Image: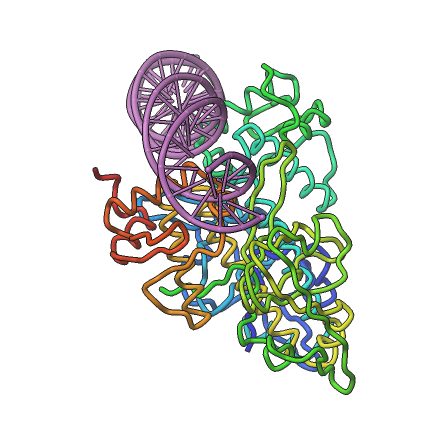
Amino acid sequence: MTRSAPDTIAVVGTVAPWLDVDASSRIQLGHTVAATAERHLDSHEHLFLEGQRQSHVYIVLEGVVGLYKLVADGRRQITSFAYRGDMIGLDCPKVHGDSAEALCSVRVRAIPLGAIDKLIASEPGFGQTLLRIAAEEIADTRERLVSLGRKSAAEKVAGFLLRLMRRNAALGREGEILELPMKRTDIADFLGLTIETVSRNFTRLRTARVIGMRSTTEIEILDLERLRALADGEEARSD
Amino acid sequence: MTRSAPDTIAVVGTVAPWLDVDASSRIQLGHTVAATAERHLDSHEHLFLEGQRQSHVYIVLEGVVGLYKLVADGRRQITSFAYRGDMIGLDCPKVHGDSAEALCSVRVRAIPLGAIDKLIASEPGFGQTLLRIAAEEIADTRERLVSLGRKSAAEKVAGFLLRLMRRNAALGREGEILELPMKRTDIADFLGLTIETVSRNFTRLRTARVIGMRSTTEIEILDLERLRALADGEEARSD
DNA sequence: CGTTCTCTTGAGATCCCTCAACACCTGTGG
DNA sequence: CCACAGGTGTTGAGGGATCTCAAGAGAACG
C-alpha cells in the first residue's frame, strides 16, 4: 500500500543488501524473487514525465538523470540530479511529481512498485532504511531551499561545486579534477539562474584562481578554502 | 490536479491510530506504553536549535511553528511552517537540521525518539505511514524549490495564499477569511523575499481586487481564479 | 499618550536577466 | 584540407525586478 519515499534516494550502498546496484536481473523478496529489467537511455531521452502514472522505481547504474518540473511559460526547475546508486521515482501517490531525463548516456535498473511493497512488508530493515534515506533527502532538499531562496549567484555556483565534490567522494571518486556531467543549462536550472550568470561566475572563479578549467566540463579545485568561504557568503565581493 | 502536500509532515489523521493529536500523555506501543509530555511555548520561544542533538519528535497541537536555517551574515530561510497536526523533527538522524521557533502561542506533544523507534519495530503500519508522510513532504518541498528558484515575487505571494488556503481546508477550516498566523518577516523568509516586497505585492493584490484585507492578518479571497492564474504565472504583468 | 513593534510606501542602488554577438567544438560534406 | 552548420559556452551592454535605505502610518500596550 505504501509507495512512499522520495524521488531521488541516495541509495549508495545502503540498500545494497536488498537491491544491489550490480545485482542480476532478479532480486530476492523473502522467499520469492521478482524480475527487474535493465534499461538504457540515450542523452535527452526521458524515463518518465510529470503526471504519468508510476509503475516502477529506478536505480541509476550509470550516468546522470535530471529530475525537473516545468512552469507555465517554459521555465524549468531541476529538483534533483540522480547519480549512480540513486533511487528514482518512489514518488508519493501514484503519479510522478516531476519528469526524469537522461543528461547523458544512462543505464538504470527498473524495479516494479509491487516488488518494493513486498520488500517493505517482508523485510523489516528495508522499510527503516528507506525511511532513513527519505529523511536525508528531506534534509538535503531543505539545504537547497536556503540556496535558492537566500544565496547570491556566486554563492550558489560555489556551493554547487562543493556539492558535486561531496557526491563524487561518496562514490569513491576523490580527485583533483571535477568532471561536470551536465550542461550549463542544467546547472542553471538547478540553481535557479540563467546560463549566462552561471558562465560568468565560473569565469570569475577561474580568474580569481579558485578553480582551473581544463575544458568546459573539467574543473580543478585550486583553493578549497576560498571556495568554501565563497559558498557560505563569508567572503564579500572583493574582485 | 490537487496537491495535498503539506508543509511539514502532515500527520493530520494519518498517524492518529498511534499518535492521536488529542491523546493523553501516554501512548500505546504494542504491549507497553511510553510517556509523552505536553509542552507550551510562547511566541518567539524555541523548541530546538539547529545543530542540537535530537531527543524528541514533536506534534503540533495548537499554533504555528517556523522551521528555519540561518546563513552566515544573518540571512534566514524558513524551510517549513508546522501547523496543528504536523510532525516536527523527523528530518535527520541525530542532529537537528534547522531551528524551530514558535510564531505564536504554541502547544506541542513531545515524543521521545526511542518511542518512535519502538513503534516502528512493533507496528508494521506505523513505519509505512511515516514513509508515506515523508514522501509527501519531499514532493511538497520540491514544489517549493520551483517557487524559490523560478517564480517572481508576485507568483510567490499568490502561491503562498493558495497554499495557506489548502492548509486550512485540510484542517477543516474552509472559509472566506484567511487568517495569516505569521508576520510579514516570516512570509518573506519563507518565500525568499524581503518584507517590503511581500507588502508591496499584498497591496497590489488588494488594489487589483483579487483579495481584500480587513486587517494586516485577515485576508479575504475575492477572485480565486485570478489568484490561481497569478500564482501559475499565466497572467502576464498587466497594468 | 508616548513607546515599541509591525506594516506600508517611496526613491535610489544593485544584482541578475534579457538580448545580442562572438568563440569554440564537432561532425558532415565538398 | 576547407567550408559550413548546429550545438554549446563565453562575453558585453542595457534594462528591469527586487533589494536597500529611509520615512511615515497604524496598532498594541503600559
